[in-house]
Image (cartoon, rainbow, N blue to C red; front, side, top):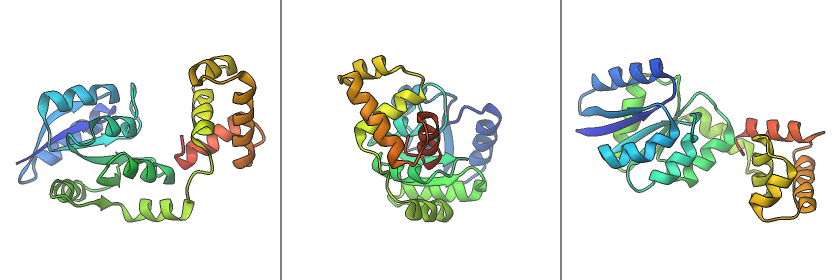
Length: 198
């Protein structure tokens, strides 16, 4: 029996997926959570074989949750956001399966079985989009500064958090805007988010 944890902030969708998976032979949903910051504790408590995580959740996004539970369970990311950078980040976080929320219950069950058996399962369309999009042109520091700016942090707070001077933070943000061909910080943030680089 493959033990599955489901993490999705949309209660109705999570419940429907759980009900459909419980109809599949050899698969049992042992836990459900609605927030990303509940995933680590749920994995420790229920010891699932496979964790199915949505990317966009309150408290902690699914990719960060995946990084925290890597090695404790096989991970399948289920997303409605086909942003190319997400697939690359997911692979780096130890994710074995990646498919869209428009997948059928049978396809999700197939993905769960495949990753449980040690394989990988990638949605072909999402994989093709990731391959054509290329890597993020941003450095780690530019990404950190842009992410914090996207969360509403002021230059002074970003500088304090990243242990940089305010001038250096401005330089990182300016460099990110140039690399993303953005007219301003907001446009740079939106571009990076759309591509899945933040």
